[in-house]
Amino acid sequence: MPLICFASPKGGVGKTTLAANLADALHRNGRRVIAVDFDPQNTLRLHFGIPLTEMGGFMAQLPRRPDWRSCLRATPSGVGVLPHGATELRGALGLAAMLERDPELLAAPVRAMLSDPGLLVIADTPPGPSHALAVLVPMASMVVAVLQAEALSAVLVPEIVSGRFLGSGTMAAMFATRLRVVLNEVDLQSRLSRASAEAVARHLGPRLLGAVCRDETLAEALACQKLVQDSAPQGRAAEDIRIIARAIEAALPTMEGREPLTAGWAAQ
Ligand SMILES: Nc1ncnc2c1ncn2[C@@H]1O[C@H](COP(=O)(O)OP(=O)(O)O)[C@@H](O)[C@H]1O
Ligand SMILES: [Mg+2]
Image 1 (cartoon, rainbow, N blue to C red):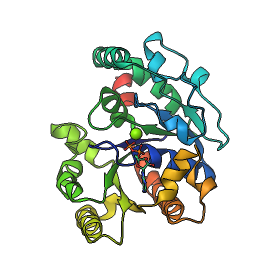
Image 2 (tube, rainbow, N blue to C red; image 1 turned 90 degrees about the vertical axis):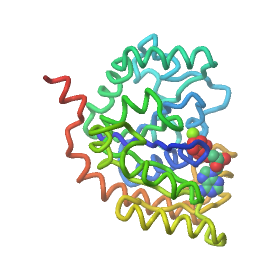
Image 3 (cartoon, helix red, strand yellow; image 1 turned 45 degrees about the vertical axis):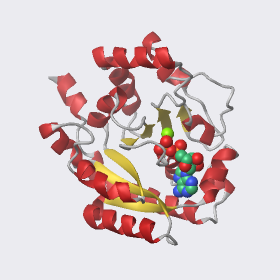
């Protein structure tokens, strides 16, 4: 415990970049952290320097019920990484169908990860709804939705605030309390980016954890397979990420106390 799940209604918004760099920042703050890739794109590993040619991983093997510990990769950052593993289309569709029939296939190993009270688990998920997200959200202490500072984001805010983005009906309302938002790629030189960011911030109030500026150092860090605190610690993006890590640390104690729903159901 706890689990922080990164999600977004839309792809290409910086979800994986922020999940990786915030996992690193939280580890630097003294947490024991593992970062788990639930997205078949299999890119989380690249931020931690795991070579492109290494294709093994946890989710891709899930039908064979692997021991998650045997898939865990130690990385120079000190964050343990569970890569997704390579999958082709048929494999990804097969896994999705399997998870729909048997969510326990994923819920059981995630519960095992969360049974270590000192371990912080960061989950990166595919864009939009997914079976993995449906399994993870009830177990998460916090769901961090990543939004870009652009016109479309203001439209997505009601969807996010209501929790509809994570479910429907009463379940959505329950999960909505766990939702926090990070605004990414804020460009203070752009009137539209600034106006969109301000509109989102007004709507969200304290649910907004923070904002990350548009900064090439983040893309450069990925190109060098490094984390931004190593490659450009003086940069603005690195500073924004440290501030958001502190905001997560401040918010977690009030959110962490909640009993994970699945644990409650399992006990009945
Ligand atoms: N704040 C930012 N400034 C500049 N580039 C960014 C920023 N955040 C992410 N990127 C770049 O945007 C691209 C998509 O990011 P990624 O984290 O893979 O998105 P997602 O996981 O949502 O699909 C990557 O090339 C990444 O380096
Ligand atoms: Mg991604």
